[in-house]
Length: 328
Figure 1: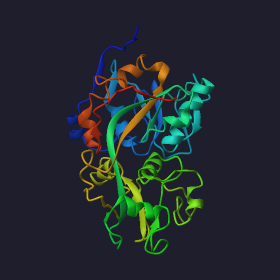
Figure 2: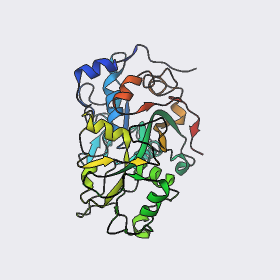
Figure 3: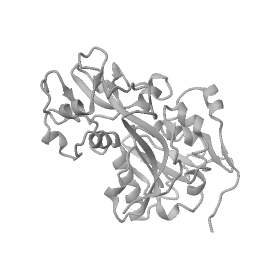
Figure 4: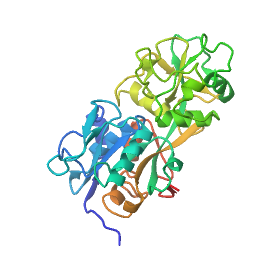
């Protein structure tokens, strides 16, 4: 028998638009510690932070979404109750799911869900996870506004840049990737027909995933494009939200380019590199509140908040709340 929480309320996206401003980076306001603590993807942190501010169960906020960057550590639960829930801040989809798995394997109760911008369920065989889609994003490539690189490349041309076979690689083209573990990185490479790996930038040495100071490159952060020759993958939803001031503006001089003849403003319709984005939850909790109340089914609190999802640059997934994707 499915347990349910009563009195689910979802703050109106229209009201949020009136109030303006971006959601807090880490949970802010009461309660400090939430029933459902989540970590992971840079791409979806803004929209999930917004949902965390909007959704209440019985008048109480239940989602706690922690950014991929910030302080070295985060504390996801009340130390007086769970003293071991100060953990290193997980950066990116892969590290977010790893943190969820560690919480489940260790039975710590520190992390209840992970944000993931890619379906990497095949990497977690036997971990009993469900990838619940809630929004649609698309990825294109970005260059600097002062770049001479064509803003009308094709998949084949991008592949030749990111596998270091294009004429002019190293001079005309200096490709960048987000750090290993980024969902945007793995999705982008897969769309190019390339295989992501921790040693990708060693195998393809023209590609960099750290800056000159050896700082890992964060996804969807245009300030890492410091040369006109730089080219990098970028979430269209994240870019639009940055430009519109819904999330912090870190696009710098980066501009989105047309991929395969499709404008980067054509998000979620005909974009070449279109993808669902997910909240990952334990399969054993699919029918249990507040997981079921918040994440599961088209009537879930998240899926009922389509206007807020669109505010952050995403389209709502037609299969929002579906539980068909499970780890092998």
